[in-house]
Each structure stands twice: as structure tokens, then as C-alpha cells.
Length: 104
Image 1: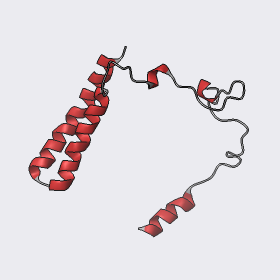
Image 2 (image 1 turned 120 degrees about the vertical axis):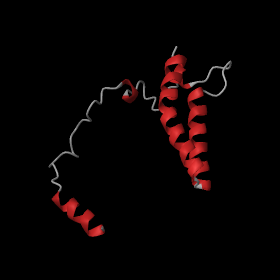
Image 3 (image 1 turned 180 degrees about the vertical axis):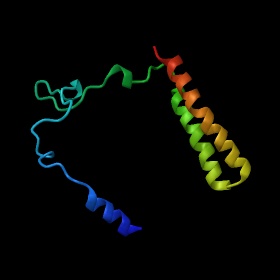
Image 4 (image 1 turned 90 degrees about the horizontal axis):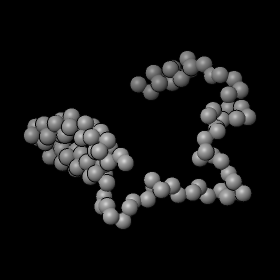
């Protein structure tokens, strides 16, 4: 199996002089701007949780999904697999709904 991986690497062609280009692709993002020598990125308002709220629902949903997955890894039973299957189906639509409802 390791020989197959090495054979594939030998077939890949490398583009010359790509890594020594002077600029980055899409390097004009504001996140890359440096003003007055301040190299520390500023904190955006979106990054700070308001004092009136608790844990965001997205983290709760992710934590529940991880808990169900860890339960399956520990038990390895058909019922735990079924629960993980249904949780994986429900997770993304619930996450999308939570993101849409909490967007302000």
C-alpha cells in the first residue's frame, strides 16, 4: 500500500516557480492590513459574547453531536449506531436553523 502512494507522488507534475511569487492570491483582505506598525489583530464585535447570553446554540448542538458519537464509540451497539445515524441526519438542518434564527 505504501508503494502505491509513492507511485502516485511520482506522477504528480509540479508547477515551476509557484512558491517564489511576490504576492499572495487575494492578499488584499482587510485582515492582512497593518496600520501604524500595530501587528496585533483587533477584536471584532462579533467575536465577543454579549453579557446577556449564555453559550451559543451552535456550540450546544455540536457538543450534543460529539456526545452521541462518543457514546457510540464506547458502546458499539446497534442502538447506539442508530442514534448516531439519526443525530447525523438531524445535526446539519438544526445547525442551519440555529444559524438563521440567531443571525441579527
